Amino acid sequence: MRKRSYILFVAPGNDGHLRKIHIPVHYLYIFLVGTTIGVLSLTGIASSYLRMLLKVSNYNQLRTEQEDLKGRYTRLEQVAKERDIQVASLGSLASEVSSLYGLKQDPNLVTASSSGIQDAQVNSSLNQLYALRTSALSGATMTGISLGLTRNVTTADWVRANSAPNLWPVEGPVTGSFGERIDPFNGEGAFHSGIDIASSYGQPVIAPADGMVTFADFMGGYGRAITLDHGHGITTRYGHLANFAVTPGQRVHRGDTIGFIGLSGRSTGPHLHYEVRINDTPVNPHKYLRLTVANIGGFSAGS
Image (cartoon, rainbow, N blue to C red; front, side):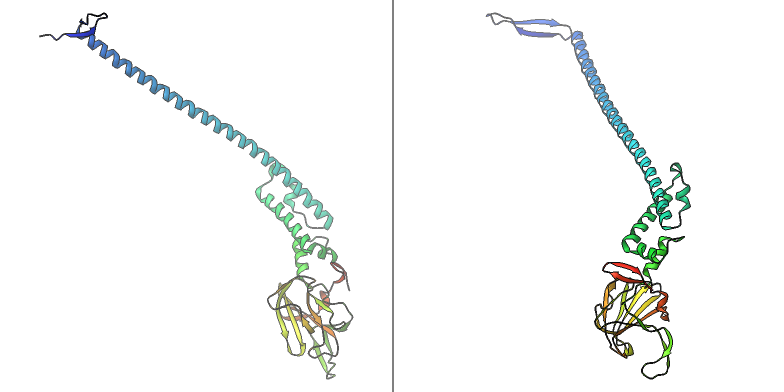
């Protein structure tokens, strides 16, 4: 028996009778199919719209990243250009300083063009600039120029000269020379391993170069003595002191007070016994004594 479908509704009015309308079943199927298709179509449209929004978002992000990369590339180009200018300026500065002080010039900096500058040349230029600044701040530049080291030398030569004990530890006449002499106590010939510099009792004794205090105590005939290690195998010794101003293990700088003139040990009067040793072998200190303290904070050429 064929099924029939009806739609029931209450007719307007006051009679309250139900009305029914006969609807063929195939119409109902068509309605359901159409509704399903419509829902699927709306879902597809919504899905397509969401995919489009996602693509637009990705595109905007990629465009933003592209603009950011463009900006970075432009900045890198500017930095590279500034670096080339800086290196060229440093090379020019190095050449000017070299000409002024007679230093050896770096051929890489002299001949390099801004387009052919390599990282190694940049580092070399910067290292030279830092070396010049360090030597100037440490006093090595002044020492090198004062010693006449102004032609065909490098900053390393200035640093080595600055580490040598070329400052007089105390000012005064030399009363005892280096080498063979007559011993003042027994009148016999003896080897004098340093020089004697006469001075008044209590006069400060200063370090002739930077170094480390390796000894500050009583040492037989030297009396109260101090030994400084200046590196490169160079040491200095100071004898007959009245007192110490330093202790073993202490770092001292050129011009620092390390002790005071006295007459301790085998001494005929207030003076300083001063030695310079290379690998613990005494050498003539006159070879190194080039500078004297002219005034506080300054140096002048000495004999």
